[in-house]
Length: 85
Image (cartoon, rainbow, N blue to C red; front, side, top):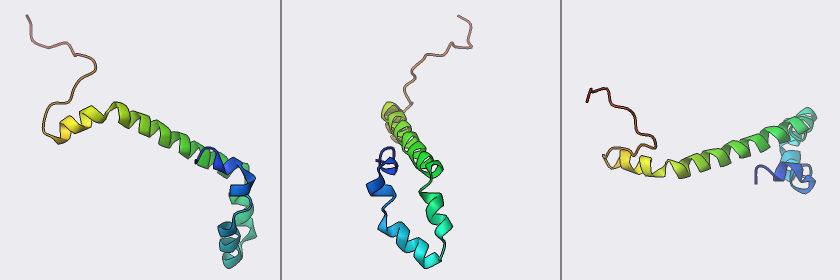
């Protein structure tokens, strides 16, 4: 939602809450800043970071459960041992 909604004028540009807050603060410059492309890009980027963090958590879930239960985490790559054979 954070990726798409800033670019839909019905949700971002015609926002009652935005008009209310900028009216109470007597700051029309804030309204133009929030509706600018820079802010829309920032919010969309935050949505992409949120999705990336969720995917990261999906792949690291087993390690997190193992650490919380007191066990050793699974390793995706085995490390060479320092002991001579």
